[in-house]
Each structure stands twice: as structure tokens, then as C-alpha cells.
Amino acid sequence: MFGGLCSCPCFGEWSSDNSGTDLDPVLLVSGMGGSILHSKKKKFGFETRVWVRLLLADLEFKKKLCYLQYIIGRIEKLMEGLKVKLKAAHEASGGRKVFSKYVNKWICIACPFQGAPGCINDSLLTGLQFVEGFESFFFVSRWTMHQLLVECPSIYEMLANPEFKWKKQPEIQVWRKHSVDGEASADLELYGPIESITLFEEALRRNELNYDGQTVALPFNFEILKWAACTRQVMYDAQLPDGVCFYNIYGTSFDTPFDVCYGSETSPIEDLSEICHSMPQYSYVDGDGTVPAESAKADGFAAVERVGVPASHRGLLLDKTVFKYIQKWLGVDPKVSKQYLKSSRVVDASN
Image (cartoon, rainbow, N blue to C red; front, side, top):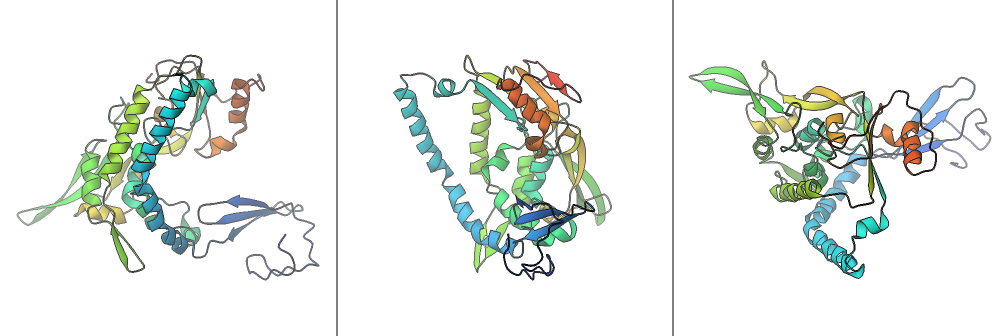
């Protein structure tokens, strides 16, 4: 596969004479910061993981960041163009609904219909870390990823829906330092889905990106927030066309961030901008590790069936049970095991 001689320390000394007959074929798994090679020795079953093209991944990402922000800034113009095309398609179909003409079954997997509060709130404030420990040095850094997420429309769309009737409202908790008459104290401040917007604004007020001698201001983006609110309203008003069957698969059995807390009683936050350089503490609910099950199953549609599968957010896409359900609903294989599953035929998604 690599040909000739590969003297990279990760692989050891390999030559064309070393055929590696005791190894299974290599599986290349693409990742955000590069790729991982998985190889397993047949005799002992040990697995070797090798990082590929991870060095300088953070620098390469930063080079593309300004371009990505330019693309995001053009979204409003692009959306207007999409509206024109959809209107033309609608008129060309003689007034018939384009969606129902081509779609008769709609299957959603791990969708954050009402948001993913814990993960998204923290992503906006401190960024996103894919791996921990030594491996993190080879991936795009948490803070570099943060600078992109502040300008990412889908992040704003996944903020907790303030109109949804949560069993418990998701919160951002901040231990704040206050001084009265020279006496310092720490108070716990609570921010719900609506109050959190003020927190985001204050914490990100002086946020900026520095690269190649240029400084770009990256505060909380209220324009993107408005677009996200419009998107949520469209979803709320949407109705399934007659003849379209809707199915929902969501993940369960994984601790999923819900509330997020910054600072502590002994080490409180003085200026809200300090949050962006602190580490969070979470409270957890049931879900797929990213999206709470409460949010994922609250699609608001008259679903034919909703199924909770014990798998992680990305793991759902590799889960054999998920594939069996898809096959069943598409009429490919009618047999599905009910073991370890929670299935409901519920019309009211808030129940």
C-alpha cells in the first residue's frame, strides 16, 4: 500500500521484503484533524492505531477559517437564490407540492429537534474538543474550532428551544465574583434559554480571530440568531403532506450534557469573558451523548413510529439495529428484533 520503504517512526522500519502477512487489511477512517489507520495482528489480536496527516492540522484549519467565514457571510444571499429555485419548481409542477411528489417516507436519525443544550451552549462559549490528552495536540484545537462555531448557523439552530416544554429548563450556571464594601462573595447566576443570549453577548463581546497579521471581530452573531429563529419557526409550522410517512430514530442510554456550569464557589468568574477560557462542568440526562432523548424524540410530527436505540450520536449511523429498522420501514426486510429497544407509536411528540 505504501510501496518501497516507509521509515516513519509510527510504522517502524518497513521494506518491500516485509509483506506483513500477519496483519489484517488496513482500514482508513477519515477524521476532522486527519485520519487513523487501524491494523490488527492476526496472531495476538492487538490493534495498532496510527495518526496520519495530523501534524500542523490546527494551522491548516486556521488558514481556511477566514474563507469559511466569508462563505457563511453569504448565506442570506444563497438562501434567497434557493427560494427562487423552489418557487420555480413549485410553479413548474403545476402547483403541486414538490416534496410530496418525490418523497413518501421520511426517516430522521439523531435529530436535535428541540436543540442540544449542553453541547451547543458550551461550543459557543469555549469551543469543541474531539479528543483529550496527548492526542489533542494533533487535532484542530478547541479554541480554533470555537472561532468557527461562533459563525456557524447550524450551531445557533441547535440552541435550546425556549418555547419547548422541557421537563426541566436547560441552564447555564455561572459562579460570579462580587464585591460589596470590600467584601468579596460568590453567587450562582442562572441563565435559561432566553437569558443565555445576554450571556453569550457579554462573554463574546471582545472575541476576535488573529491570523497572519489580521484581526477579525467575532462577537455573538445576532444576524445568524435571527435566521435560526426563522428556521425554527418554519419547522414548528411545517405539516407532513398527505401520503408522507415519518419515522424517528433517536439515541438513548448515554450520559448527555444538559446544564453547563462555569467557575466554582471557591474560584468564581469575575468578567464573563473569562468563561471562554474555562472548562465546563455538566449535569447529564439520557440521550446519545450529544442530543438529549427528550429533544430528539420531540419532532412535532404525526410519526408512524419512534424508536429509541441504545447508541451514541455517531454510533447510531453504524448500528445494526438502526439498519434493520430502516430496512423494515423501506420494505426491504420486515423482520426486526425488539430486544433492547423502546418503540412508541405516538402522535403527540411532547408526551
